[in-house]
Length: 352
Image 1 (cartoon, rainbow, N blue to C red):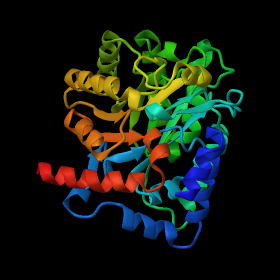
Image 2 (cartoon, rainbow, N blue to C red):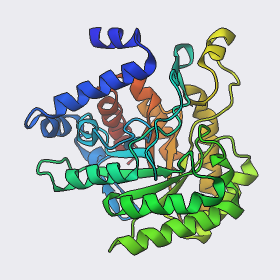
Image 3 (spheres, rainbow, N blue to C red):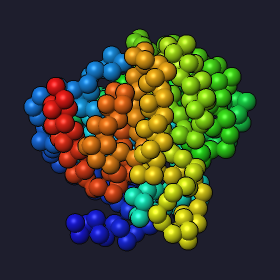
Image 4 (cartoon, rainbow, N blue to C red):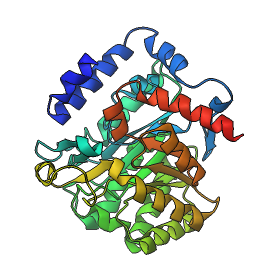
């Protein structure tokens, strides 16, 4: 509690770095990460896990991309109770991201505004880190997704080559791969959600992943909540046509409607993607729209405004196979994922 109060007084990004460093340090204690995971993952009938795109997930709740951009703390996060960890967004070239401050809390809304700008070590460094983890004895058996995006310096006309470069390096170490075309913080990125641009991009990534691996790496696309319903349906139709494995819905929003925070606080937070509780309704709407469009042909991963086990349960009942969170983890602290995972397991058991 004291640790959380101290972190709450810090700049949001500094607090994030400090908390993540503490998690990684604790996970280095011999045997502690494995013990923590065994204690924190749910037990009983609800812990039978989830089967999705050929992978077994020990539970339905995972960590969304954005928290561990560089695959630096996968085991520490798994030890807290996440069933899967999605690292990234990783870009073909290393980049520092946007100038600080670039991460702000809107506490009254249990929300966060970020304009990080895909700050990361680049695909080559992250791939090497994932390769070392795979070789290391004692790494926890957690599903690891890799989320890839466009390097800021790469023009839109060369985006496909940039995604291909990331895929070539990262696909061999990804349990599943996500094409991110929905962050609002890289100029021109969201334009790639248009079907005429998205089709050749996804086709190229699929071909590259097949070329560098001896297995079929599950491929998903992550979309924005700000798409119109017609555009959501167009992406769904394309995903089915290209035989993608799934869709992650949704990323952050550029909207600011209906916030409880004062206009001054919202202005101070500035531009960027809004995540957390205000996103919940639209994220749920997009999920239902997608499930109605794709039937059982695709795995849907729901993210956006999930704060409780009841929230996660509602998404699963609405058609999600898996759920992810990030902002609620920031507000809820290190024991939040285990608590939600256990409570969700009980709700799922009651459904049987």
